[in-house]
Structure formats: structure tokens, C-alpha cells
Figure 1 (tube, protein in one colour):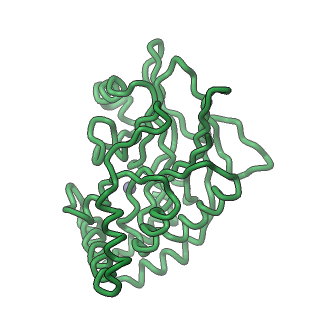
Figure 2: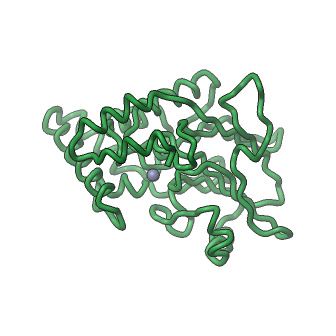
Length: 273
Ligand code: ZN
């Protein structure tokens, strides 16, 4: 089974469309979204509708939660963006109650946790705090107790988003935890420049996979990020990481034109942070 993993779209329709076109070209059985469809970006409505149409399911991210309920631990820029997004979704209900309410129903039904292919626990943040907890690669050095605890709570495999940094955390009894960026994984194919790394899972390791962010990458690479997970009984499972260029200027200009979205939300897309 081939499953496209997308996450942290953040209202960036242009990036989402480029990713979905690439997914369609490669062919998958299913697309799943690890959360944060909205927040920050200028096209929340279109992104929710596209995820509802194309994804088997989506998870509750902290920005989805903020728009539906209340922002928690948000800075001013993120909070303003959440309130703007909420207003846009509510105005859409007034303009077209049927589709507007269907959209809100979809958002209200998304879960905080899903089990994929009986093996992969999927959450937006961490298994310990599914909506809000970040798992950073620096935590391996700075907060080993946190990393140990999170791995203890995982049977074997986990899929997360939230940090907007793609990669694989692995944990083995012998070596403890480690984090690998896609570019350090190897398996690059010169005929496929979008493929930047492949991880083949070892049965002895626990692993947490983050496909990175479609709509607001934060690893100093401005390209949209996603992954395809390959599972099945015949071969070791693997995950392929992809990066794709999209029209950042077009998205930034939409952001600059919306007063309640801070210009920084456009600027940061060029910097991949
Ligand atoms: Zn996010």
C-alpha cells in the first residue's frame, strides 16, 4: 500500500495543489493529512475543501483547534491569523450555508489520533500530547527524558507533523534515539530530483516519521515537503521524502494583501522558516 503523507498545509493552496499533482503523477492508494490544514495562509477554505475531497482522513492540529475553539500558546501573529481564518470560515457559512456548514462539520469531525495499517500511530504533535507537543531533533540532546518517554509510548511506528521539519526519529535498544534529515538518508535518484531521501525501516527499531510541511517549511528549504509511505507484507516498509517548488511569490502577495495576516507570514515562506 502506498500512502501519501501530507501535513501542515496552513492555508497554502498553491503548495497543496503542486503536492497533490505530484502525488497523482506518482500514484498512491490513499492520501492522509497529519493536521494543520489552516492557520497562517491565505486560502483556508480551498484547503479544507481539497483535503476533505482528497484525503482519507485528517488529524486535529493545533491551528485547526485554534480556529474551531481557542488558540493556546499562540504568539500575536498566529493568534490574529487564527481569528481571521475563523471569520473567513464563518462568513462562508453566511454566504452559502450548505457548503459552509459541510466544511465546518468536516473540521469538527477530524480526530486527534488515527491508526494506519495497524502499525502506524498518527498524531499531529506527539503521542503524549497529540495536538500540541513538538518533537524536535534538538530534544535528543536537550531533553533526553522527553524523547525516551515518547518512544516508550510508541509500540513501533508513529507518524507526526507539527514541527514543519521533515525526517525520521529512530530508537534502538543498542543505540538509543537518533534523528535523520531526508538529505542524510541517501537513495537519491538523479532522474527524480524531487526525491531527496528514503528510509527503509528496520524491524528492530522504533521510528517516528515527520513528512515536513506542505505550506510552511521550516528547515531552511523553501520547497513544499511531503512523503510517501510504502507498506505491505512482501518487503520492508519504507518512506520516501519529496520536495517541490511552487509559486511562493503568488502566495506571499495574497498574504500581503490581507491586513490581518502579518507580512512576516509571507516573508518566511521565501526563507523556509
Ligand atoms: Zn503547523
